[in-house]
Amino acid sequence: GESVGLHLPTLSVQEGDNSIINCAYSNSASDYFIWYKQESGKGPQFIIDIRSNMDKRQGQRVTVLLNKTVKHLSLQIAATQPGDSAVYFCAESGTSYGKLTFGQGTILTVHP
Amino acid sequence: DAGITQSPRHKVTETGTPVTLRCHQTENHRYMYWYRQDPGHGLRLIHYSYGVKDTDKGEVSDGYSVSRSKTEDFLLTLESATSSQTSVYFCAIRTNRGSSYEQYFGPGTRLTVT
Image (tube, rainbow over all chains, first blue to last red; front, side, top):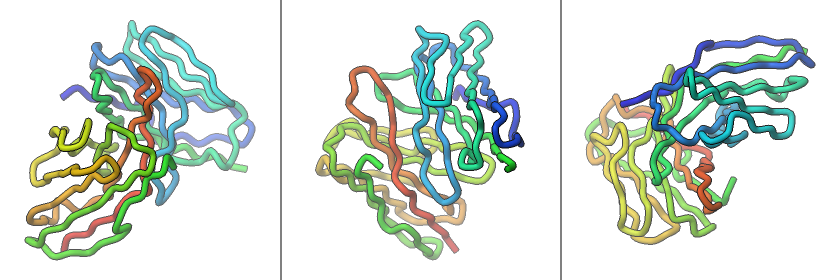
């Protein structure tokens, strides 16, 4: 089926820097996108979502950008902290049952 | 954690044995999901439920069955476990916030099939 993928499997940043994690999706019918954070040994944790009728949404220290023209999604984390170190997944949905298709994940490492 | 628990949290079983994993939620959510997570993959949907006794297949449903006899419990059964089913299994619920598809995940069950 259609899949969601990531451009970069790993990302290393210094504490205080801004981080950008990218995601490409292939299903043009997708109308909902979510970013999850997963720490070792835990389940994915919801970070932020965005509908296809939006191109930007901001949360606390995080911003998601959606470019439907090129089917690209990004997660920006401001002032990255060591506690942000985790695997980040993007996911998309295009059905009313809320079934999610996940990307493979990006490992974010924040160095003090 | 949206009131989601999974049991057992860890299990080791032998090839060919049946295994049932349980997902329990306390907040009366209608939609529940089972995913598996393997190294090098994101999460992949196994089965999902949109109500009591209403279930459907996901992307990787072969070798799995599910049941939902009451709102709070969603069971995943491996009728005859195989080594390829060694994985971490996550249950999720979808919140009832208008058109939002927010899903919240349980802590996971690590299953090893030897």
